[in-house]
Image 1 (cartoon, rainbow, N blue to C red):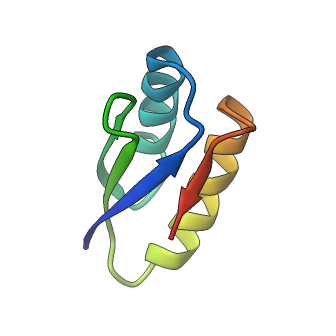
Image 2: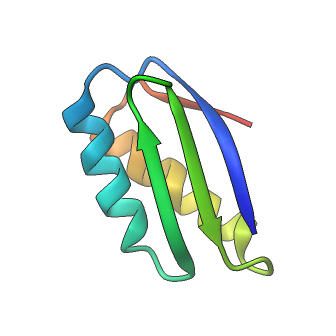
Length: 72
């Protein structure tokens, strides 16, 4: 399942790259992209685990960029 999310208050391209790398390492994630310029994130992950994976994605993003919010 592939879903796109809008991001709010992502402050730098370096943080976006760190978030993308960390998300790609999560179990069940096939691919992820985080665009600083577009303030968007795309997650491609297992259908049955998507909600659990998104909880982990939120945690990862909060560690890298505490001010950044994922708009569902």
